Amino acid sequence: MAHFKKLFSTLMHHSRFIHCHLLQSRTHLLLISLLLLSLFLLSTSFTDHSPTITATALYSRLLFATKYISPFSSISSSNSCLVSDSVSNCTLSSVTTVERTRGNPREDESNMIKDLISCDMFNGSWVLDYSSPLYRPGSCPFIDEAFNCLKNGRPDSDYLRYKWKPHGCHIPRFNGRKMLEMLRGKRLVFVGDSLNRNMWESLLCALRESLQDKSRIFEVSGRREFRTPGFYSFKFIDYKCSIDFIKSPFLVQEWRDLAKAGGQKETLRLDMIHGSSSKYHDADIIIFNTGHWWTHQKTHKGNYYFQEGGHVYNRLEVAEAYTKALNTWAQWVDAHIDSNRTRVFFRGYSASHFRKGQWYSGGHCDGETQPVADDTNYYAPYPWMMSILESVIAEMKTPIFYLNITKMTDYRKDGHPSIYRRSPGTTQDCSHWCLPGVPDSWNELLYATLLLSYHDLRSSH
Image 1 (cartoon, one colour):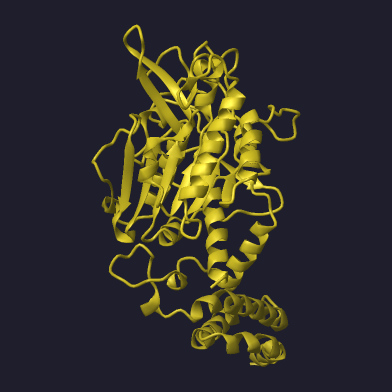
Image 2: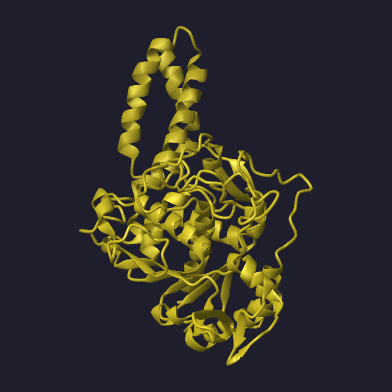
């Protein structure tokens, strides 16, 4: 009996500290039950431990419990739901029971936003992360066979585990449900080359993974192959949104005229936006890119290929042609995009890693299994295209969100399909990326940028 008196005396001494947590929590009945049960269980150990020590240990556990449980206490089960529930009227504010741990989630998000605002998300390093990927390897039917390295026999797997970590801040883990909620009733369009298709397929798979019913997403034309030129649109039924891809590798118009000797003459109209622009000018979010096609042989040589009006240049340096094309794109965006409605992104140049040649001359990258360590002196020259892009963007009146992924991709010499592409052969792919893989991190950065954008939008209203 003396042990019980000592135990209660010690607990009463601590009660003034735990009292405030009990007042803040609606779980006091649970805690009282926990207290009585603990007293019963701990009474068996009195012969081995001091009642003062036992009571102090019990107090520390109860204090932890009040802090841990209280964030859940204001959530009524009748208001709890998942955003993907199509039959409920859920809002983001009600999506809490599956996400909250300790602390106020709104304060946590506000602190995260403040952290991101002051951070350069594109300056960082790749770190091994053994948490679950955004989608399980082999689980997504929307990945081109050429990007499906696991299916094509790639034996190593560390390339799946590297995550991008900025210096000085933390980017939020991709939350497919929250992103779909931000995209509810909207249209997001990727416009560009096959590297943008790489990113588009990654986003589709990450968003699909968040759906409880995977049949609630479909491609409008029923196609499963996305390599051919054209327009592709995936609908997320429960969110009334679409994620589209339009192939436009130069952003300006490829042109074909009848040649004098018969046949067709192909040129690139530097003064004319690509004809597909009518299909996306009113989208809610547009993600542009262009880059790799400007390094192809016929483009890079610039002989009788670039055209303005009726004039075909005998010779034009590719950097000058690229500048003219980007200015055409910028003028079109400024004239046709309503920045009050549409957010415009431009994804920067994605690094290639061909050794001893290019894609057309025997270059290769197979055998690479680790990224370049960022503490080495390995830095490729900054692509000339990105310097031109940055100068063009600086002169635009339309705000452009610049996804500068060049440096982060430069480290990832291990992330390409190389010999594990769709068709075995001598040509290796050291430009595109395996999926799952590097483009998943681009989409995490896109997600973080959208969080910032939507936070600013809410704050202004």
